[in-house]
Length: 363
Image (cartoon, rainbow, N blue to C red):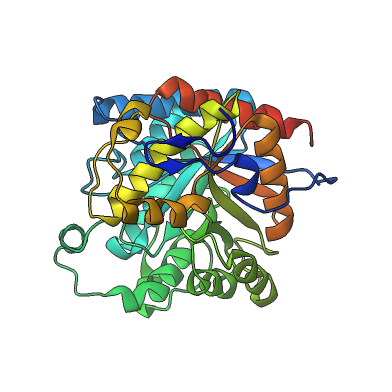
C-alpha cells in the first residue's frame, strides 16, 4: 500500500513520519524492553478471553526476552478486563520463570496503603526479586465508580502524597507520617521490598517520584508532548531513598509492529478508532480491522484522528527499531515499556515478538 493511500475517509500517515519528520540511524546503548498489558477485550470476545490472552502473552514476552511485565488497573469499562492487577500478578508470576512482574499500576488513591503493602510484600515473599509495585494517581475509572471504590473513606486525592509516604514506610524501614501507624507490624516482611515505581504523564507525578526517591515511568501513550522535559526535571530533583539510590526512568509507548508496513497500518487504524470513540465517551471493546474500515468518519472525526496519531506508533521491525531508538535517545531512557494492542491475539503476540527481535540487534 503506497504512502498517502486513503482508508475509509482519511489518508494513512507513513510510518516513518509518525514520530519525527526525520528518523536517523545512530549507535544506541542497550535498551531494555518491558511490556504493559491492559488486558483488552476485543469485539466478539469476552473478559475471560482477555485474561487468558494476558497469561499467554506474558509467557511469549518472557521467551522473547522482555525485562518486566506490568498489569494495568481499570474499572467499569467493557474495553479492559483488569480491575485487580495484584491477582493477575500472582497468576502470571506463577506461569513465568524469571521476568519481573508488577502493577502498571495500582491506583493508590482508592486503597489503604497498609493493604497494598501487605499484598505486595506477600507477592515478593512468594516470588523473591521479581515483583514491581507501580502506583498511579489517576482513578482508572469514571467518577461514580471511583466513589464506589473509595466507599466509606473521606480521604480525598489531596492526601495522595501522605498515602505514598505511609506505603513506603509500611514496605521499608522509614517512619510513617501518620504517627500512630508506627506501631503497626506488616506481615510478611520479605528480605527485600518490591521495586517501587511512580507512573504518570505529568510533571506533578514526576516531581512526587523525585521527592520520594522512586523510579518513574512516563506515559508517552497518554501525553506525547513534554515528556523529555518532565524526565529531565525528575532526574535533576531526585532525592535518594531506600527504594531507589539513583534516578531510574522508563518511557511507556504504544506501538504495533508487523512484517509489512501495510499490515502495521491496518492494525494502527483500530487504535485510531478506539481513541476517537473514547473522546466521544464510548468505551466499547477493541474493534477489528474490518470494523475500522467500515466506520463512517466525519470531517471532525478525521481531525481528532490526526491529532491523536502520535499516540499510536506503528511500522515494520526496521521502522519500529528506528522509531524506538530515537525515542530512547530523545527521552534519555534505557528502558521502553511497550503497550501493543490488536484485535487478533496472534497479531498482538507477533507485534511483541517482532519488537523484541528488532531491538536485539542493538543489545
